[in-house]
Image (cartoon, rainbow over all chains, first blue to last red; front, side, top):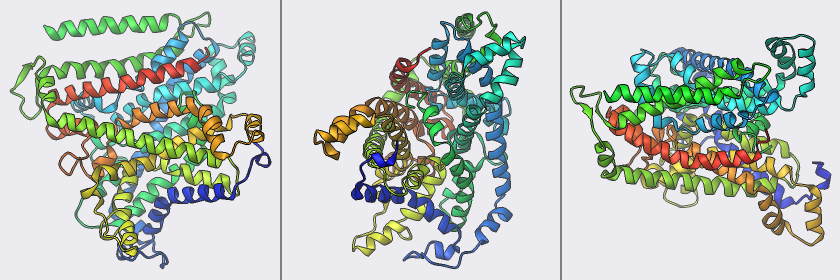
Length: 274
Length: 311
């Protein structure tokens, strides 16, 4: 891992930096456009240097109901993640520290439920939500996001917990702690980094989810993914406002993503690549 | 009559599987109540909608015309397979998945190897590389569609004019390629990140030995790094395939499946049948096909992961 042991090619450095800048460019271009006026944003040749304006951001807040959609995104992602953790932590605890001959099969079966394509069950979920009066409600999205992240949650927590020495849990049990005491007083503090990583990945996945949010929400429960999609209407070009809304929706989760790259590998490959 | 029998058999299957899944979990420690909530929730989540989709796919059922109800036999499927839209959507799905896989895994593997050489600012370059993966799909699609690919005001049009070319009207003349470009931009970082993680576990001594034997960077990549990444590549291919089979938001905000059916993949076809035409039977039959496709890929993934799982 020590860079000194690695061969250093100037060509490799140039290729790598070029690729990185090309990949990142659309994001930069979006952030730049968010500080332009609408006229500057659609101008050709494009403007690279300009007097930045905050007008788009204030417009988004004052006229576009942006806070409503942002709050929906936050409430849905956080609630789905919290409920998922409450269900997943005990299961991962049991499977990591007290595995039985069924554990392996249960874990693989959980993984396989993640393979059910959302679009394959669009019709029944839509009809259930409709009959329950839950179309365009946060509750429907919270429940769906919680369930679709549950297998990833159990898996990630399982791989983290397995790295915790079992002796510590056993010691607490010998000292007379019940299973719940062990979880609350021993596992939670010890496993906090793993639980935090799992929470972060789940929040990222919920925040960016766009299939169910587009199909099950209209306005009241619409998170940012659905709000941004409303800019696809063909009438009028509001690139600067689109960019401002998109920048606000992207930046917080981008920061989360930068911090959780390594955990993301673990979570999205189900521990197959470490 | 049919309904109640199906419900009874579904219930006995369900409780049988709950019991089977839970029996072993409760050891001496009494872990059953710890595992049960997850297992029960996932059982309901995976079986109930699946059973309903199967059930609807054999029914005559249109939300816009509630008078027509009843058993349809195989007619939803027969109608679907006779419909050129299905064949076309399957082709679009396969081309989209295949092209994005080739681009993301190909460039991802090469760039992972390039990044392994170590160079100034490697950490920052790596953060920039993986960033597109964290941008929500509706944002990615709209930024590309408008700011970059718009045939009049977009940046690409300006570049094209600058080098004396006719600006391309991306979504009219090459719609599927345009969607592929956007989706590949979102998924290349994922392949890159996984493959780079895999390369970091490659023993430095092996690389050193190969270099002493006179292997250049290309030989190293071909004979040492690619074989080392083989497993990670197969995981990337399977995980991406499962997500790419369901590409929806990118199509929804750019082409809405058009022009014609040029960018209508299976996911978008189902959406059109379901929530635009409200044809529950037909949409469910197409849903069953999507589920079968995904499960073929999924079984490979589960087997690969199973080999690595030491419980």
